[in-house]
Amino acid sequence: MQTITKIMITSVVALVIFAAGAGTGYVLHDQIINNQPTEEQADGFSIFWEVWHHVESQFYGEVPQEPVSTYGAIKGALATLNDPYTLFIEPEPAAKEKAQLEGQFGGIGAFVRQDEAGRVLLDPMRDQPAELAGVQKDDVLLAVDGTPLIPEMTLDNVVSLIRGEVGTEVVLTIERAGVEEPIDIPVVRAIIETPSAYWRILEEAPTVGYIQLTGFTERSNSELSQAFEELTHQGAETYILDLRNNGGGLLEAAVDVASQFLREGVVLREDRKNEGERLYNVRGGGNALDQPLVVLVNGGTASASEIVAGALQDYDRATLIGEKTFGKGSVQLIYELSDDSRLHVTVAKWFTPDDHAIDGTGLLPDIEVLFAEEDRANGRDPQLERAIEFLSNGQQVVGSAE
Image (cartoon, rainbow, N blue to C red):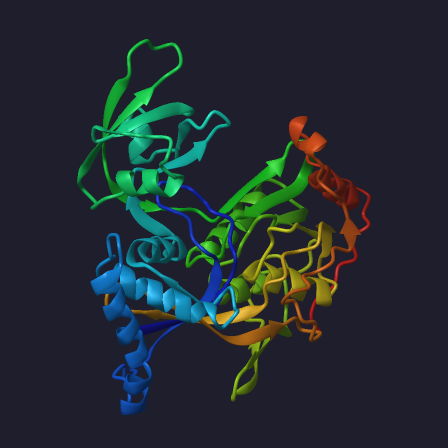
């Protein structure tokens, strides 16, 4: 049995032909556990079998077979802990979670979304199999390998149909604006590396480098280094780090990202049962240690994102603009089980460098800017606008860990 320690986060679902994942922070290690019950444990569980045998013999209806009944029993037992982050994940979604955190998966390289009418729309990634095969932005997906999409299907169901073994072919039946008949497009699945960072120089502020981090994966730190290199070359003198709706990811990646902006100090404090406090320190070698910095946050900024935002706020290294963050400050140990399912177990709480608890409270921005429905309807981003204004007026107080 392999054990994976990560800081679990409630993440926004990123539907990129691979499923979405719950973000978190993870540290990988192996641990061997004796999974045989003691005699006392076996005796205590006998009542379960007593109940289940009555159900199997008397229930008027279809009785679920293994592993459905076992999974249900596990989930029911975990529910008694009253902890939303201690949970059991069945094999298929567990594989998707693992792929997301590794930053790569087997698929066609396209984003999937649903419009208000319930249609499934495709948006191919640049230079990936879907685009190379001829899929275009806003193509409407009608069927996968001849299996029609029906209203009852979730986006996860659609993703599962499209995903498959690398090197195999999947046929997408799509409807395209301006074309009368549906089109069949065969696409050969490949390993898709999913970027977690997107960056650009802002047209309205040519000295501001904008970096959006959508998650914390094994590739995030190297992507961030590339972003700084390119943006500096393009004339960036100040930065906006957008952590809005970033549900988290790998703990080690969060420490690396914070270290891009801090010279020294503690990134976070972790308090684990029976072990006391553990400190995660700045690792040095950052690429943006002095440039003025704004971090955008909102209610979807969670867990590993709050680690980074909290550290930068405590050291006065960045100004937080936006809305209060989610408030996810617990640590989960993740077990990869023998049937490829996963178990997340809350084992610790974490705190900011100044010992502020985040769990259940979140971080308050230094400058609160709300995002109204009217803004969305008109395509405005008042939080980004305020960040640009703040940096343009030179109001940023630059600091670093001392």
